Image (cartoon, rainbow, N blue to C red):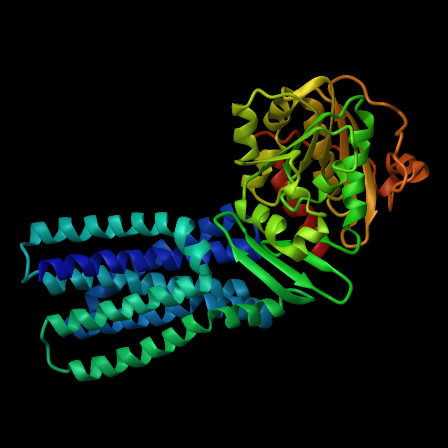
Amino acid sequence: MPLLILASVFLVATCGLVYELIAGALASYLLGDSVLQFSTVIGTYLFAMGVGSYLSKYVSRGLLLPFVQLQMLVGLLGGCSTAILYLTFGYGSGFRLVLYLLVFAIGMLVGLEIPLLLRLLKDHLDFKDLVSQVLALDYVGALVASILFPLFLVPQLGLMRTAFLFGMVNVVVAMVFYHKLGKPGFTGVLVQGSAILAFLLAGALYSTQLTSLAEEALYPDEVVLTRNTPYQRIAVTRGRRETRLYLNGNLQFASADEYRYHEALVYPALTSSPNPEHVLVLGGGDGLAVRELLKDDRVKTITLVELDPTMIDLFRNNPELAALNHGSLSSPKVEVIYQDAFVWLEESDRKFNVALVDFPDPGNYSVGKLYTDLFYRALKSHLTDDGVAAVQCTSPMYARRSFWCIIGTIESAGFVVRPYHAFVPSFGEWGFALISKSHLPGHLELPPGLKFLNPAVAESMFIFPQDMARIPADVNRLFDQSLVRYYQQDWSAMNN
């Protein structure tokens, strides 16, 4: 009996934290700003647990059946939580309200469980041992959930299937617990539990279809591929004219016009270098920038630092995606390093003639650190004396203060900077920075045969109209990421 009790506590705690992590991760995927989403979800969940613990004093008799029914209700709500949230975001309204109501409901029910369990078992174990063991296993279960969630559950099962699976665990724990304590009325509990289990099992079996149904409302074209990784949610869509890549719901490229973006990113730096033999690419796991680099015979080696191995695997081994980058990631010139770019810059001592910095926009603090003065100082130490780099800097039209914050931050690291912009139909006006330690040419010698750039276009990219002209902005520092705040304000103003 003690082993059953302890196993039940462990599983209950694991399930509860998994639901909390799912809500935080899903809110981060759909709303951005992971710090804000996880903070508010965790805060709401813990507050609700406190409310549930307080309310447990009003359950005075027949503790076993309420505990078992609570377990089943937690399993049902938690198991369906991802489906409810996905479908609400895609087809309904009031996503934030539904999110926090759901988190509060699950947290309150979980908060009710532990006090009821302690009272229920006080006659089976010495109270001192009971409290210490129950609380210890509660925390151990939370630890196990926090480790399994990013390393196994999300990449292998996905958010929706994970939720349904742990919902079933809750229900099974309730049924076994009631049966082992030998109370009458097990048949009724068995019927209830079996019905909920069947419902959750159906959800788990059809989770791929449910996810696809929800994502159809999130994207304008057919979703042909999705992946959950420890780092992001990857989605690829296909329309009549183009393939699109989305990371956490944000468009990364459209195949119909990505050549504009990548020519603008690559060729100003590549042609400004007198000897671009060794090139560093930070980000750019789709291989599209690498494709452009490989067109220049002067390039001997390309070192690509990418955090997410799944991105490389997809764009190297998926035939349709690899066709977009012309198989660039399989070139013998390309070395792929799977590591956080910031960490790699700090640890490596290699030098490069050209560097391309192609990160997602700084919508949260984990990405914002890759736009700080400390990052650019680290980048500077990896350039040769005549080295040149290009940095994507978000939109000077739609995120004007963010753009000039990035420019000012790069300047604060001691670079000579020439900001420029290009029009990409899928994105609108997009901004970049051409940077060097000491000198930048005033004229770009472009190779023939480019689809977008020519001398006149290249010259015009460095001219900013009045509505994109420079405005004051703070330097983005690691421990005070003003850029993330600017970015959220800029895009919020655009969307309102």
